[in-house]
Amino acid sequence: MPRSHSREQHLTGRIGWLRAAVLGANDGLVSVGSLVLGVSASQASHGSVLIAGVSAWIAGAMSMAAGEYVSVSSQADTQKADIDLERRELQRHPRQEHNELAAIYVKRGLSGELADQVATQLMEHDALEAHARDEIGISATTVARPLQAALTSALTFTLGVIPPLAVIWLAPSRLLLPAVIIVVLACLAVSGALGARAGGASARTGALRVLLWGGLALAVTGVVGAALGMVQ
Picture 1 (cartoon, rainbow, N blue to C red):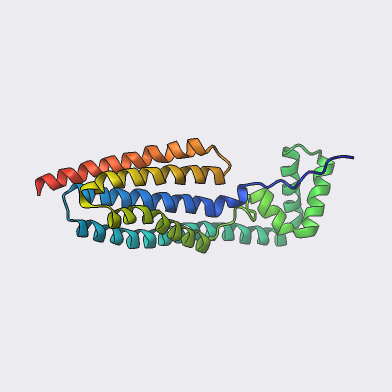
Picture 2 (spheres, rainbow, N blue to C red):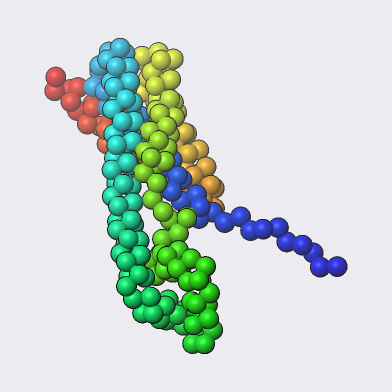
């Protein structure tokens, strides 16, 4: 008796929210962690460091949400304009659109006769969907979702901010600098690994990639903060 195969679970459907989630979490860790490190290295008081961290959290979360919403809305507008154009072309020149679709399938390896049959059946089922997917490249997995991206970015940015803010709240002043560095780098490694795994990639590669850029941001900001503290 042949073995039954479970339905494949592809990861492409995660692209929309995964990109925003990884970007938000890493940005929260890196930007707020770096800011806290820079302000602390400038010999600011513990209270000033906490105020700077909380301010960076609020401003960063709002900025991420607004930026993602505007950016993805522009993408959504472009997709809508392309679909509207395709809808008009289907109404005005249905035969030419049929030939365009058949030609796409021929390029993908079908014979001319089979491509014509496939194009005919798909257009009878849903002509606009067929052209949006195969001619323009817009499908359910690639359609832009501005609100989803904005909320995901703001939420994950807030989650990324929690570790450095917790360090400010809990660590004594003399241990603040090393504690921020250790906690932020550890969280970046975990974030990079989880993001990579969610996308089907190597957890180790994802962790190292995020650690490299996060560590560089911490180092540069720390050096600048220390330099500014010396000239005050």
